[in-house]
Length: 258
Image 1 (cartoon, rainbow, N blue to C red):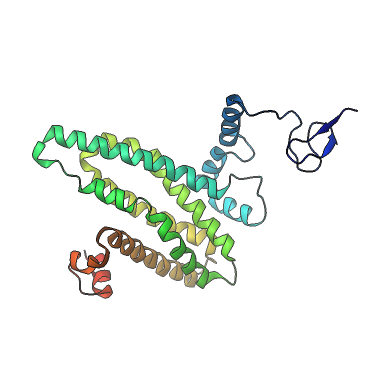
Image 2 (spheres, helix red, strand yellow; image 1 turned 45 degrees about the horizontal axis):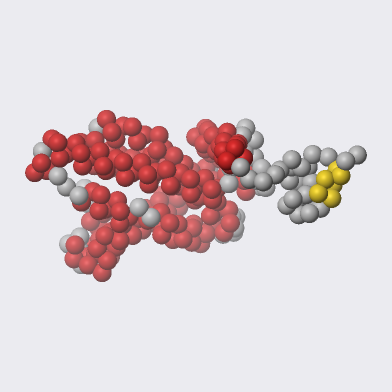
């Protein structure tokens, strides 16, 4: 039988795949075709493609989380890659939405042209990366006896990727109702927190009122931290002055003001 020399680890082997590292024997010098094929394979592959992950996160989220926790690394798309891909696409779409909003508002009423929305977007578009360590730490403090740090990080990477994917899917609605963008932002923000509460209960809940109550408290902590980070990114040390509150307690009261 013909012997092959693996171009990845230089191990001699027989057959179509290297017995040492698993690389395919026919791999040669990188060409554009290989790059396109690799990208398309990673997106559509039925075993671990991103499309399967999105479908299962929508329909069977608990299965995804616990499957990955238990060691099914080949079954689902990487949580880190999923998070980064969806975040990147959403940032690109977000800029296009603001471009269109500026165009419509300028055409509709030149005196109503406002760049505040874009400024907020530019200042807070990376807030999820800043929030992640806080969210992970808080959840770990309460559930570290049942879930290690790695599992909690994976939970938030998958969950945030799902939220980003939902925002990507509903983005056409923004273009249709662009003059009501603020209302849409509020609606989808509320839906995001409702979805987070559901997923917290799916993964960390024990189907009793104590864990449901604990997760509701955690949800409110995440809500407070989320807006603290947003306003700090916008106003820095002038946070309380700009929000017309005297301290953190006043800020929290203002958040829940109806």
